[in-house]
Amino acid sequence: MSFASEFKEFATKGNVVDLAVGVIIGGAFGKIVESLVGDVIMPLVGRVVGGLDFSNYFIPLAGQTATTLAEAKKGGAVFAYGSFITVSVNFVILAFIIFVMVKQINRIKRNAPPPPPPAPAPTPEDVLLLREIRDALARK
Image 1 (cartoon, rainbow, N blue to C red):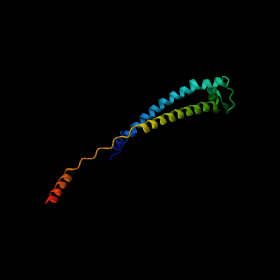
Image 2: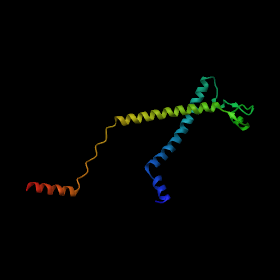
Image 3: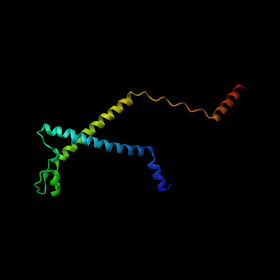
Image 4: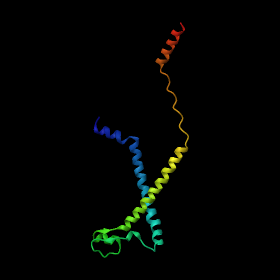
């Protein structure tokens, strides 16, 4: 089997396509959660703790005197712990949402009726013929 045909077989398998769709949807969903955290939750948290903007919490490591993270990064190395806090909150929310989704899917699967048993395979013709011969011989 050639390399190209092996790759074609691999790429067209259902699992690979399902994985690709999952990654694309996950990326889009991640952006939604990122916006939720950055535009809704963190401003509320900042308001509760006194109007602080976590995205501008940093420690300059190269002696910068900048007041914003973007300016400080232009001047050298920065320990941006505020960004880390924001990303950590983003992760916790995303993990919680995925947990709730998986829990609901498992509940639906648990409550779903079991699939019907597969129909028995039809008896092959040669077996039927041999049974007829056996029965005919048994009658004699």
